[in-house]
Amino acid sequence: MNPRTTLLTVAEALAWWIALAALWLVLISTVDTLERVVGASAAAVAAVAATAARRVVTAR
Image 1 (cartoon, rainbow, N blue to C red):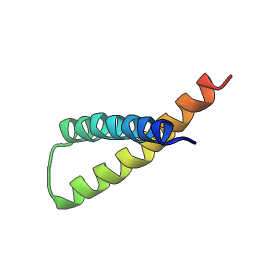
Image 2: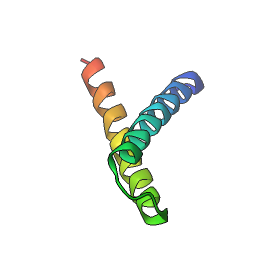
Image 3: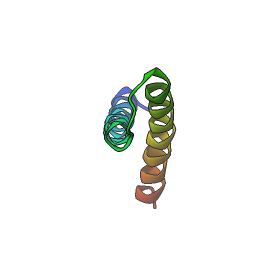
Image 4: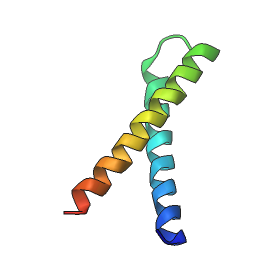
């Protein structure tokens, strides 16, 4: 991959992570350190999956 493609992929994953982490914070009732860690981790996994899924679909 060239550097531009890598940068765009990282930016897309970061955008997904921000959106999903914000959604997690909106939907939970108690915001403490453990919830933030779990939400950030879950959002990171989902962001990578969403980015990978989009790349697979657009590669057809």
